[in-house]
Amino acid sequence: MKYAVFGDIHANLEALTAVLERAAELDVDKYVCMGDIVGYNANPRECLRIVQELGVEMTVKGNHDEQASADSELIGFNPQAAQAIEWTRDHLDDEDKLWLSTLPYKTRIGTKVTLVHATLDMPHMWGYIFDKFSAEVSLEYQFTSLCFFGHTHVPLAFEKFGGLVDGGRYSEVQMTANHKYLINVGSVGQPRDGDPRASFATYCPEEQTIQLHRVDYDVETAQDKIRRAGLPERLAERLGIGR
Ligand code: ZN
Image (cartoon, rainbow, N blue to C red):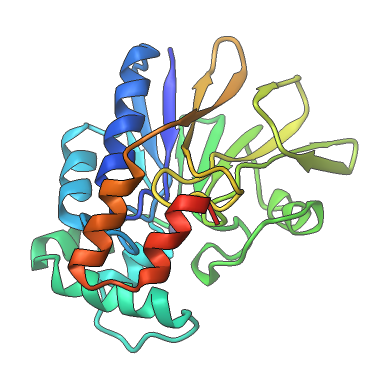
């Protein structure tokens, strides 16, 4: 059994298509989505439709999914993100919004894997896990050996054993019994670790391995679409540098 774990798609159709092609090449059996299907890029409906039709096993809700499907005032977002959310609200229909609004903040696959977009301690507060200190807080609320998360758009792996937490960049993780793992799979549609390639992971429960994959995609087309949609220029620029 092999899962593709992907999220922070952010309406980037070119990146999502490239990731799903790679996943098919890797003979993935099931798909798990870490949320933030929409926001920032110019194809929210198309990406939403693909995720719905893919028969994704589980999807959790991201902060952009939440805001795009609500009509509340936008607080705590930077101006470009807020503008993108307003634009996304105008480009989703009521059914799309209802679907996004009913996604859970966190969920489980069986008894061994938890999924959450941001953090397990307060999933609805959208905190960020960038270091072992914030990872430690989330790990206190993790009752499975493995948890996948997103939100930071930076692929990092944290490991806890004997009360100690360590972590950093990874390309592959071989899990050990009685250790806990908290793993960020990076972002499909807006990577921020300095590598502009789309990011996702595969997980094999039998072998207890997680592998990170980076995929080239048509960045120029995604940038053109942002500009033609009248979305902020900064959102196009950052795709080119992965920041
Ligand atoms: Zn995101």
